[in-house]
Image (cartoon, rainbow, N blue to C red; front, side, top):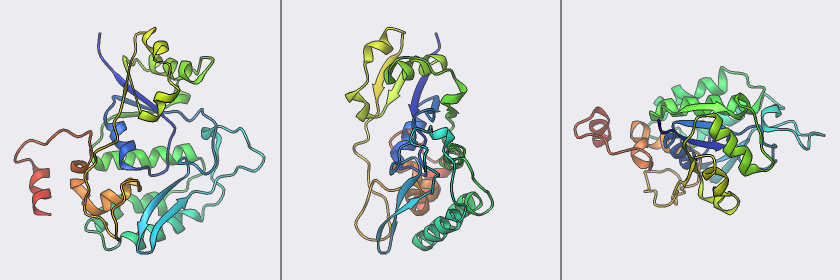
Length: 248
């Protein structure tokens, strides 16, 4: 029997490096956007570092009268946010070592694309950043499968099974609610990713902050970004990436 590791997480807007480590640690990463949209959460916002401190970047979402809408149904309310976010990002990272390279990656997403559905936008950003980082994991939506089960654990286990998973990899916070027996009963092993022990990288604007958006890492470390993540195995001696990083 072929082994397949699956993670199932709600989509986030330009999330932190740990989110991408989780993606890189599985064969298939399912965006659980059938879940209810929650305000003031990571679905539509994240944090960057600026010369004046941490700054939230929030994508405006239409929530009026839509108290129980799903993430996949959440629509972006105001297109002006794209230019505002890109302006803030450019101002914060224009002096970063790899700004020109990362600008070529991100600027089209902000300035050449018009986004209307939050889930679709989040997925596009995730896939572009994964490509830059060298992450090849398959990214799908929970809507690609049939959601069944009476509680959250059963629904996640069902999704994992439908995706052909033999192991479910979760963030550590899920230990408080996951019933592992429900996974084990259908032949799925449960494991947890450890987010502790990240090393620091060169970072602009004062005291080091681990919990900021992944774009902080890629702007500052460029092709070497994966060396500051936990899911990447050591590169072979003499590789092109090692030579570039040694010179940077």
